[in-house]
Length: 141
Image 1 (cartoon, rainbow, N blue to C red):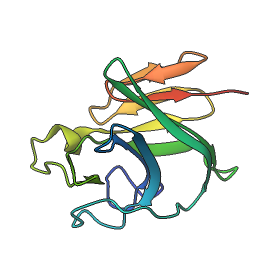
Image 2 (image 1 turned 180 degrees about the vertical axis):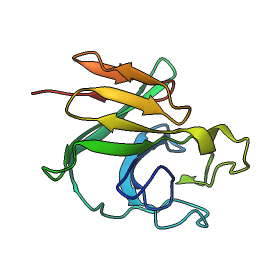
Image 3 (image 1 turned 180 degrees about the horizontal axis):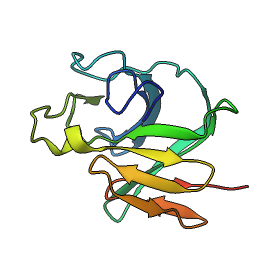
């Protein structure tokens, strides 16, 4: 997810993906208003999203999308989460202070390719992709 207002899930503009009960990929967008919700519902984001799809190969889920961000958005707050699915609906994840999901935040500089994680570490994005333990971004010019 990208959060225009900070490094937390509340206010995030999320790309959501999971395998449904029939094994097919389900990919959609969800504007996360608060953390008091029990399931993510499909809704429009505050920026354009096109070409949205996903894959699950060799135990790795990847979401593909084209995002249309405003020209002034050069650094974005990113949030990534993992949670359970019940009845083909993504459910709330653990939120305790030691929960890994609560530390899954960082920033991504779209101009110079640097990233930082919630732990404050920084790294340089390789020209074609950057990966963390859960997600990958692919850029083209």
